[in-house]
Amino acid sequence: MKQKTALITGITGQDGSYLADFLLEQGYRVIGMVRRSSTVNFDRIAHLQEVEALEIVQGDLLDQMSLIDILREYNPDEVYNLAAQSFVPTSWRQPVLTGEFTALGVTRMLDAIRIVNPNIRFYQASSSEMFGKVRETPQNENTPFYPRSPYGVAKVYGHWITINYRESYNLFAYSGILFNHESPRRGLEFVTHKVTYGVARIKLGLADELRLGNLEARRDWGYAGDYVRAMWLMLQQDKPDDYVIATGETHSVRRLCEVAFNCVGLNYEDYVVSDPKFYRPAEVDLLVGDATKAGEKLGWEPTINFAALIQMMVEADMVTLREEGH
Ligand code: NAP
Ligand code: G4F
Image (cartoon, rainbow, N blue to C red; front, side, top):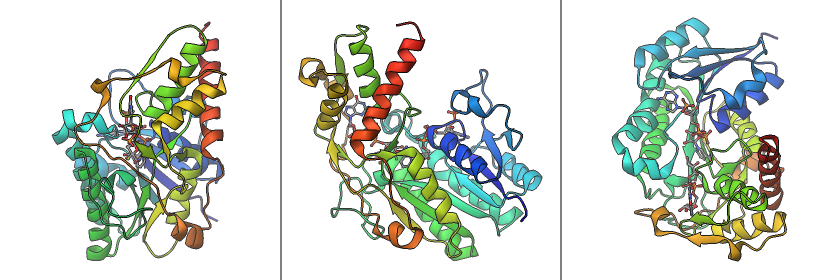
């Protein structure tokens, strides 16, 4: 069988790095698109440095021609569009830039595909943030959207333009509505990693408190390794469609703190401070997904539960800090 080629935008991010691992294991040739920066930022894919089947190429979702050129040069079978400004609080500080990357960037890639090769299969990284002020619980593929941040609004645009190109041009355009997924490779500003890293620092005597925002917000947290497998499974279906990917369990940030501090034998109430500085202008109070469709059609289900995920992250942070000599 001919070796398949996949293009990943956002390969330096959490999901891009796990997806690269997964696709390389499946025998793919992987092209990772990175934007130019004055310092390299390849920590999450450093372990793949010597892998011949992985090639890094410069391109930017802000630059239409760079996308067209990459598709022409590498002719991928599958494109996974994971690049985005993905941190919700930043989207209030840089709403226009967030729209350029996270919303219009999707159109630029879809148009590039339409022009170069409409047979390419396209995955769009849509988000449970689109549900925002939720209209029903749990949320599924038919739940109406009510985004609560410029990021969420941009993702709604990205989702609908994906469907529009599917319907207008018969593109193989798939949208995965993924609920929060985490790992030791998660950015340190996201709440799970902020908490597990904070726990490790406190345990090792490097800090004596952890300042967070809204402790009552609830999220459906899964493991990123499980979620990239779902992305691939979607693109193996011949009929393009939308899928919710979630665990079906929801926990508050307070409960996350309790579980993470328990991992090292500490009580979160002695260390966690709720600081209004970290509150958002508009909050998403509750997310919990219904991934029944993904279970039935893709045979997908999560393998790592919430407690195991948090333990994995705390342990990884302890190891990292000890390796740094603490
Ligand atoms: P992440 O760690 O923040 O990674 C984002 C990636 O996008 C980075 O590789 C970043 O490159 C790249 N990027 C940003 N702007 C770009 C541009 N203009 N051109 C090219 N690349 C650009 O995000 P993630 O957690 O892996 O999430 C992957 C995708 O899934 C994102 O679209 C996110 O919005 C979406 N999503 C994530 C979750 C979740 O819970 N993780 C849930 C639902 C949806 P640099 O390294 O250069 O910054
Ligand atoms: O970890 P978070 O920053 O993730 P959020 O906003 O849910 O967004 C993540 O998941 C989305 C999928 O639903 C992705 F689309 C998006 O790209 C990103 O990956 O915050 C989770 C919750 C929020 O309710 C926030 O208010 O935790 C609450 N929180 C409380 N204290 C905090 C903090 N969040 C952060 N980042 N930092 C805090 O100190």
